[in-house]
Amino acid sequence: MSTKKFAAFVVTFNRAEILMDTIHKIFTQTVPPEKLLVVDNGTTDETKKKLDELYPEVAYIKMGYNAGPAGGDKVGLEILANEGYEWIFWGDDNDPPPTQDTFEKLLLLAEANKNNCGQVGMVGSRFNKLTGLLQRASNEELRENAYIEVDTIGGGQCKIVNAKSILNGVLPEAKLFFGFEDLDFDLSQKKAGYRILVHSDLFLNCRERWDRLNVPNKVARKKDERVLWRDYYSIRNALFIMKKHRHYLAFLSILMVSFGKSILSFKHGFRYGTLVTKNTCKAVRDYGLSRYYKSSTV
Image 1 (spheres, rainbow, N blue to C red):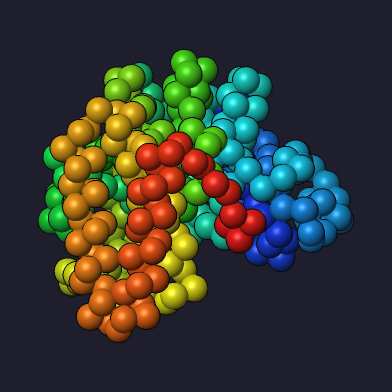
Image 2 (cartoon, helix red, strand yellow; image 1 turned 135 degrees about the horizontal axis):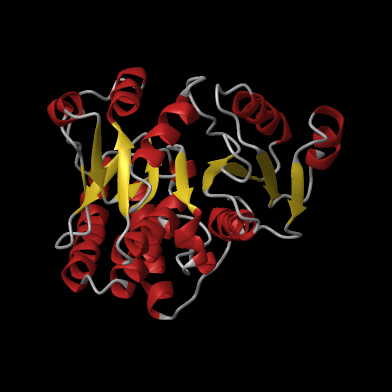
């Protein structure tokens, strides 16, 4: 590959050991990046020391505060795009490429469609503008096509972004901090005329590996209370994104679904239902007041 073809960044937060494993898996790809940048949101562990010991060739930037995935992603994309790389891997410290040839397959797909391709990845979904929900591609469609076009590629699904879109002003919303910052970015790419493609074989392999070839529909399933805080960001940010992209019916749908789930959550007990409902009300309130709080736990 020619110089400035492919670079990667990884956002990390106080997970030095996990980061080292991810870096190893990135560098042992059949097509590794020409440059790897670590964007460090953390403040308490020895990430820089371990990088200097094990991977001194890796570029490093310390944010100095927890900017969340959204803030770290924005910085990583801007730096590498401005340095002239054509394609940029958008990574998180605990989501390495699952196979040694993941980058090779994705870059071949990207190059074959480079004129109008905004990004490629392993797993993606289509977006319903009326409901705001993501729609699953069928196994049959994936088996019949080498790749499919989607509306969004989720975080951790080996997003490789066309730097042209970054230079043209398509960037993550840093204030979202955590949750759906990738959806917002992807909808902006689509609005700018870029296609988003996923590799069908990699997609099917992920479903097989995660036992998700068939996914049952579960309504208001009970979650571990320790992760309920994620729903706060999901609801708050989803409302912001629907308004930003003028999907007003989806905005109303998300409001109704969120409160509907709150009501249904009481079937798992009064305490659990109360926690879910408080979370939902706080998210809607803070969206309405334009409060974009950040949590040190993310």
